Image (tube, rainbow over the protein chains, first blue to last red):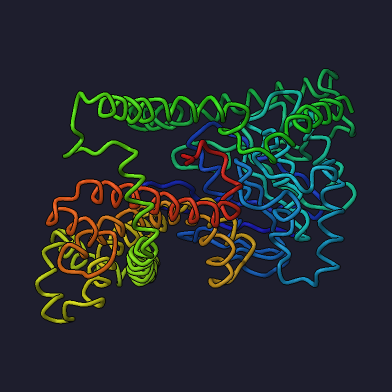
Length: 258
Length: 285
């Protein structure tokens, strides 16, 4: 349902952040995008969110091109980015301003219920922990009724327990609402726990290095042999992706010797 | 899921902390008497000391009247019905000047903060005008507007305008880009973005700018009343100097202090609900 074709992004200072990205996300799929820093993961996310314009290539959702923020795409940023002057419930309602009040209240209550924060509806963001704030951010994106949820390293600032908790909430949302999820992460364990497919990126410029299908049944146990095997594959792919330049010069050197 | 328990425990702990935070003004809680006592110790000791020295005949208190004489002057002015007249005159000038200056500052500050073109055309001129000491306008204002209220109010308005203008302009320029992106992601219109994100975000800094504007308003009302007034606290100052009545000068100074503080308190109290969400140590009182 989300199609990315020959997507490139070059910043005005000449830095090539992304080059020829091809990605096809199926309906209901969870795709994790992993890679070290400088792979253009966040750039890719911003392009799909419609916050930046690509230099070349197209992004389409159900055939409609994405040039501006699209109603079918919900975004959760790396930071919660809650509006500090609004209560939790008002923050969740932020994307529903044009809906009738009754419908809006229902959607807000439902979204908060799903992330387990119903009893915190009237608090201000400053009174919540980091994990709770990020749950509010997820509820806010979810309440607007997107079909695709984009998450940009949403749990990277959280401790391992809180992260596992949030994985649970996210998977519950995905299952109940039939969401399609694209999550950017630098955490291999997170990718393996969540994703149906992991896209490994390599830097300079950001490209897709490899795609790895994760054919494990859910719920997944962090310590199960299957998860560990996929993790190993993924680490190996990431390792390889980090040394692309060396390989290319090797090939060039071979060519020169000829 | 084991994580759920952790989340809710965290919630309880925060829940216990919350009510105290919401209801009390945190910096002024149980320590209020002590804070007040410490703050008042020095001025009270000085006043009482001077009172005792004069009462003992060690000093005349002719040039620096003891507190009792200043209070007596207050009572006298009040008895003659003059105190209210002077306070009202000064207050009226400050409030009208502040209203005009703040309105202009808010409008132009918002314009320059929001529009690059406006900033590039207006800001350099305004900055240049700012470099002129406001008192330097007095002769021109008197020529243009006469020696009565209009020129005084104009001077105060000019004094109030600049801090408000700068504060608003800066506040808009420093709004968190990340919050504006949230508004883009949810496809809010420009008007909605201004109303729901921009205005609340710039409110705290704007209020600070208004407060310093109000402070300057009081500074300039004195200057304005020095340049010729037949009523007002500034007139009491000049009159006290010319008639050799230091007790009247001191009474006017004390009245200024009380009036300025009271206006600031009203402004802060009136706007506190708007910025109660702030998670910062705000300067209070």
